Length: 322
Figure 1 (cartoon, rainbow, N blue to C red):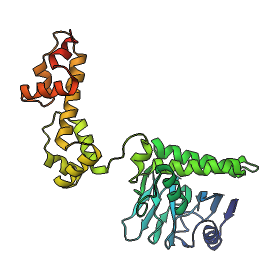
Figure 2 (cartoon, rainbow, N blue to C red):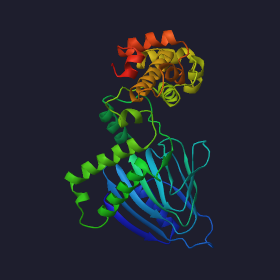
Figure 3 (cartoon, helix red, strand yellow):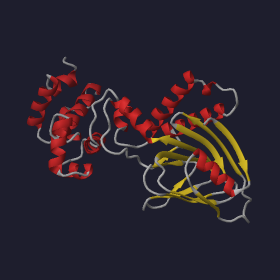
């Protein structure tokens, strides 16, 4: 299947076109008095992806079974209200696209007549295979994605722009996008881009491939400490912020960070003290003042910990080893 520019005012013809290009469906116009039905479906198949620029003119509703593929609906205007399985209604807008799951019956409760949408079908096996290549191992279990995708900025916006440009170029006629040497890199770019833009358990690993992968609870606790190292954290409080038990947090920190949670708090605080002492002008502040600022209340213990970490006393850092 290549590219197609399809126009019709007949609902049954539109339903059959969506069936041929995407999924079996039921389509019904909600209110013909508001706007006349006038479907415009421009679609292009790019290996494991089908990219479409779709609009219906009138408000419609649609019903699907399980899609069997991942699917992104990204309105360029108007809205789409969708449900999957027994989930709550979700709204796709020009600022927030929806990434649908292959499983669970899908209901498009209202596709507004003013909605023109970028509609991308992504083969589930191809996306899993691409993720496997990127992380170097098969992902465990089902691929779970957060359905809401921010397309107002950042990676989400960049991905939508790329998909639209690819579709526009492919539908323009004698395009290089049809050539195998160009089509394959474009497919890979779109799969990679979606994996970088969407929220899923492997996103952090993809975004920072050189850094050690840490589970989300560990990352939540580490982020909280780095944001407020002066706060009097306890292991219990960090476990609550990480949304795990104290024991699970302690085990995870030992495995993925190499130290206990409170040892990590101490290391971050020592780094902040070190930075402040090195940046201080002569006579600007004292060691005790800086230590207190970052949560060290026992001066003797603090000095010993500081020397063990940096190989010099806090006062030597402050004087520039002078």
